[in-house]
Amino acid sequence: SKPANKLENSGISLADVVEKDVKENPVMLYMKGVPDFPQCGFSSLAVRVLKQYDVPISARNILEDPELKSAVKAFSHWPTFPQVFIKGEFIGGSDIILNMHQNGELKEKLKDITSKK
Picture 1 (cartoon, one colour):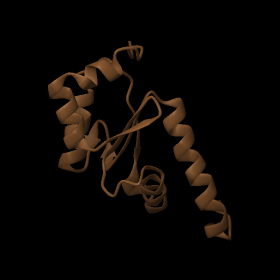
Picture 2 (cartoon, one colour; picture 1 turned 120 degrees about the horizontal axis):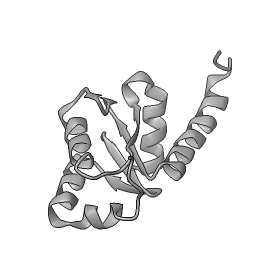
Picture 3 (cartoon, one colour; picture 1 turned 135 degrees about the vertical axis):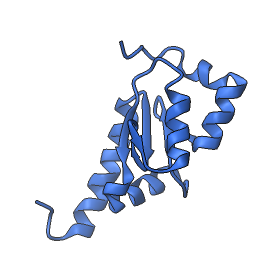
């Protein structure tokens, strides 16, 4: 059940949720849809790029929760989705991830994250 006074409670707890997500998951993706079924081209691209690396990908579907969407934007100060965080650091959207993939930076960033196998 949701607290009656939504504003007071949800804002704080969602910010905490985002902070915890980002801290505890080496690769955290806020996206439209889920990794196995992205619901927008940019989210799909981000997932495709990240799947080139043998790392566990954690994700939340922002389409399911508009409040989560706002909380993530507030946390990263970034207006669009998907949003990729690696080891607690906000990296950016699909274009940035693709760029880093192409120039080798992404490999460097992900190299000490243990594989998902």
